Length: 209
Image (cartoon, rainbow, N blue to C red):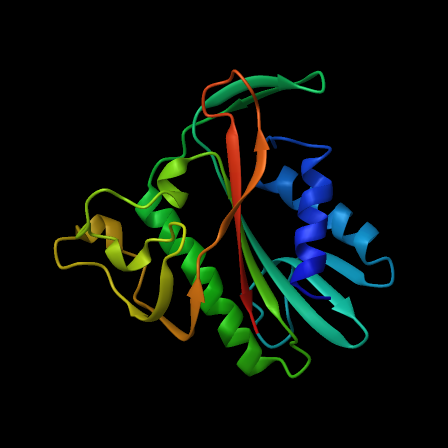
């Protein structure tokens, strides 16, 4: 499996589904497309590896003795629409600073898995969202989560910390992240629900080798 398989599965999925009810809905639909893309692979959901019993991986792919963990994030901005006779009512998740941190924490976890699992080949962190605050470069810098920004073209690497102005309620449980490698954020179009507010969805795939 490689990133081309990931992107092909996402593109095939976007041709069938423009929007999802929840992260679990996205997880199942994406895993289904991956299975069709890789019929010889074994795919598990919410997989708990033996070496880390408190860790759960959203999608775990096993192919030819190699493993490929995939972590997903689905963050929405408020939208109500009907797609393929299916009604969707998504809430505004907000808390973009916390969610950016959570996405990069997934990357950190995948790096740690590489050190613990000899069968690890590559891992993938995937975010799908209709909130442009994730993919658009902010007009102002020096926000409390500056280190965790993941907009288009941003290179993320090294030790990532909250600014000193961040409130304790924000940073509690969301610790400093340390990345061994550097990653360039690249967002691609997933779907565009025309004539609906917040109808554009974009996705970002980070490959951890």
